[in-house]
Length: 353
Ligand code: DP6
Image (cartoon, rainbow, N blue to C red):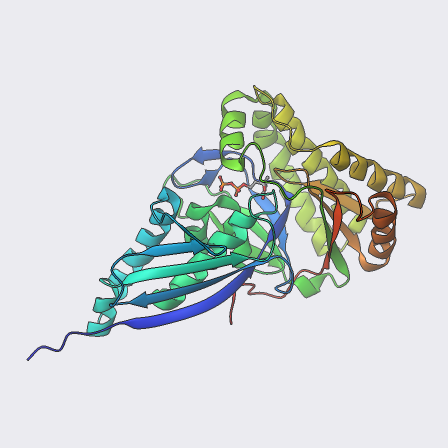
């Protein structure tokens, strides 16, 4: 008599946010999420901004279900479906035992929680998809695959949160995306004392999503074409050298110039997109004046698709920047508060709890 195999597997993992210093902005393939330029970031420490995801896989479940930050959401999101399909097809290639085959018929329940505001330009999709892919890979037994390629089809920047320390997403040239994945360039402890400060200027959901904003930029911005062909390839090489040499002045200048150019591309987009607000601009001025006073670049700002500021600095300079910040942007100001500092972590960042 054949005994039907039952499946009950579960895992809980967490993955941190990453902050790009060379920005990803533009896709050459919207479904596979293939970028128009390479990018580079540092992954934050597990103790700071992160997503925690639990996945349960069971023959008892009637359907796949998803809960985000305590609320049930539709599982039909096409990006999420692409991720699930890819993981399941890898599991099907590997299935040998009855239990492994039964896994393919079982349904998943996914529960994901961020410890920071979602979709406020704080890279929630990056840690969210990185964590989901990593946790799904545990329960489906497909951890031998280069998982950053799957995280990438969830959200481009998510592929960089699959590793700790300094991480490059090499854009690749293939149409199938097989050479478009993340790799760690340096361990976090390569550059001891590096700190990242996140100033939450606003925790409201952003007006123009990265996905739609970069689509409009690709169609309309001439500056973006110049950035793709002339600027980013040189900057990728230069920032890797600066990190390798632990040269903060070089690193900081490239970081600020890249953030400036990304926001210039947004302004060059038609119709234009504004992510930085007056508070963001005041942070730029504060950092610029601090560097002028010091006579060299000791702190570097960078802004993603939202008004929140991120400042990179070495520990000693960061202590001064933090007190300047609380002086100029006191936490009593309604939409400006101090979030905390963090160091970049050792790899891998998505650890199994
Ligand atoms: C400005 O990764 O959120 O933060 O691939 O469409 O999901 P999708 O976009 P997303 O874009 C992030 C853009 C950025 C720069 C960066 O993180 O490199």
